[in-house]
Amino acid sequence: MAETGPKMSLLIAALDDESDILELLRVNLKKAGFRFEGFQEAEGLYRFLQRERPDLILLDLMLPDMDGLDVCRHLRQSEGLSRIPVIMLTAKDQETDKIVGLELGADDYVTKPFSVKELIARIHAVLRRGIQAPDGRPLDVGPLVIDPAGHRVTLAGTAIDLTATEFRILHLLASRRGRVFTRDQILDHLWGHEKAVVDRTIDVHIRNLREKLGTAASLIKNIRGVGYKIEE
Image 1 (cartoon, rainbow, N blue to C red):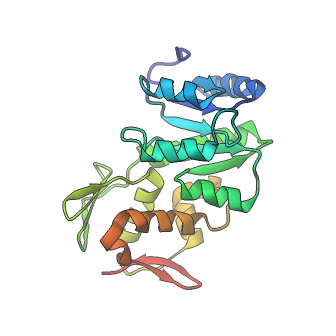
Image 2 (image 1 turned 90 degrees about the vertical axis):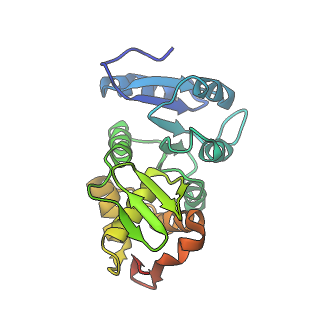
């Protein structure tokens, strides 16, 4: 059972094969007002997800029973799980590892050893992106309809399943169509002062977004050396 905490407190699940890391997370996340559930093997997390929906998952990449990247891929491809924010928490600190994680749909990437204070700040930043939908009426851009209130995007009437980060990038570009946003401006919009310093982060999210948009992918223009914009 998940630990009890303040009423309506958010639930964080963590998958990490190191028991001391899980205990560190349990103690500090509880102090920060979260409920917590930790797992050392992927199968335990999968069984938990059959009955519970955490508000965010912390995911190690090096696991005894499964590659953490495969776990992330499973989450993003599973109905009912694909929108759960994921922060990768791992000793793998090469840029290529970070890029692969982001390409699979991770919302952020924190390397070990890590600062608990920074990790909690990252958690709050990612959760804010998920629960604070941008204000405004639905936006029509070509065949796309972007509904901020419902946090929903449809393409010619068919719903497209976007992560919170992808949705906020798309909404930002669509709300100022024709305007070019630099990568730094997009990062500031997403993270503010808590933004993750990962090269090519925005490029990865844009690539994932274009893949999901299918025939509408061409609406997002890459202005070489500057950034991105939406233009019909």
